[in-house]
Length: 135
Length: 135
DNA sequence: TCCTAAAAGAGAACAGTTCTCATATAAGGA
DNA sequence: TCCTTATATGAGAACTGTTCTCTTTTAGGA
Ligand SMILES: [Mn+2]
Ligand SMILES: [Mn+2]
Ligand SMILES: [Zn+2]
Ligand SMILES: [Zn+2]
Image 1 (cartoon, chains in turn orange, green, purple, blue):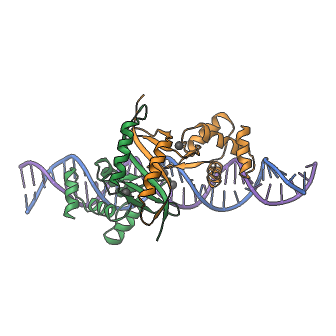
Image 2 (cartoon, rainbow over the protein chains, first blue to last red; image 1 turned 60 degrees about the vertical axis):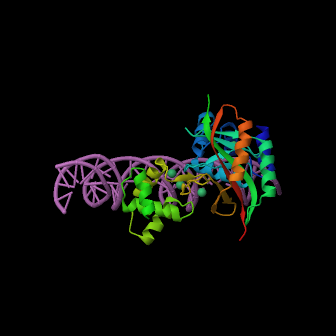
Image 3 (cartoon, rainbow over the protein chains, first blue to last red; image 1 turned 90 degrees about the horizontal axis):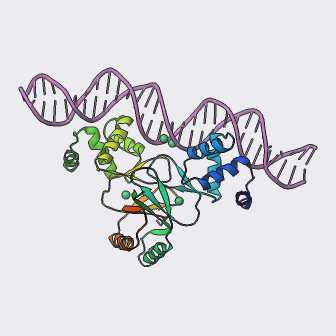
C-alpha cells in the first residue's frame, strides 16, 4: 500500500483514494476489464465513477504504471505485470494467464538478430499462446 | 469470384450478394474492421445493413472462413489469411501486417516440444511483433 | 490554513455491436 | 420453370463499452 503510494509519487501523480484503489485492483485482479475494476472497488471500498476509472487507467498507461492486454474481444483488459512476459489464452473462455520465459525470449532475440524483417524495426515481441488449461 | 462462391458452397452456406461482397472485402482489405468492410462495400457495390455485416462475419468465423485479429483496441478486426501467421503491429498507428515465417514456427514447435507448460495444452502460438515500419 | 491546479462525480453523448421482427430471397423439389 | 420454405437481409431499436462536458471537490504546496 505504501508501495502503491510510492509508485504514484514516482510518476508525479497526486495520491487520491481513487487512484490507490484502481492501481490496487489492477494488481490484485488478473487482466481485468474496467468493469471488473469498478466492481472490485465498489465491493471493497467506496463508490467510484466509471469515467474516473477510465481516465485514471489511461493516466496509468501514459505513465507506464500498467499496460493493455491484446485480445480479440471488443473490451479492453489491463495488466499490472510490467516485466516482459507472454500470455496463455484459454480457447474455451476468457481466462488469460501470464507466461514468463526468459530462455524463450533469448531464443527469439537471437533469431531476430540474425533474421531481420525488412522495413521493420522490432521493439517488442509478445506471444499469445492459445490452448486449454487443464484443471 | 467463382473462387469465393466455392468457399461458401464448401461450407454449406447459401450464396448471397451480401456474403460474396463481405468475403471479397475481407480478402481485399488488410485486417479490416466491420466499418471498413461496410465502407468498402457501399463504395463499390450496393448498400448493406450493418447488422448483416456483423452477422455474416460471425457466420464466417464459425465456419472457419475468416479469423479475428487480436489488438489492444475496443474494435474488432478481421483476417482473411487462414494459413498460420504472425502480425507486425505498428507502435505509431493502427497498421498491422502479416508475417509468415515457417522457420520460426519450427523453432517454437521444437522449443515447446521439450519445454512443456504445466497444466496447459498448446493449440496455437501467435507472435505479436510491435515496432516501427520504415517507409 | 488557504489557495489553486488538478482530480473526481454525474450523466449525456458517442461508438461499436447485437437484437428483434418484418420482408425478401436462395435453392431444392415438384 | 415455378413453388415452397427455411434462411438471410434490412431497418432501426437496444445494449455495452468508452469518452466527453461541466460542476464540485480535493490534494498538496505556499
Ligand atoms: Mn466502443
Ligand atoms: Mn461494445
Ligand atoms: Zn499479463
Ligand atoms: Zn493476418
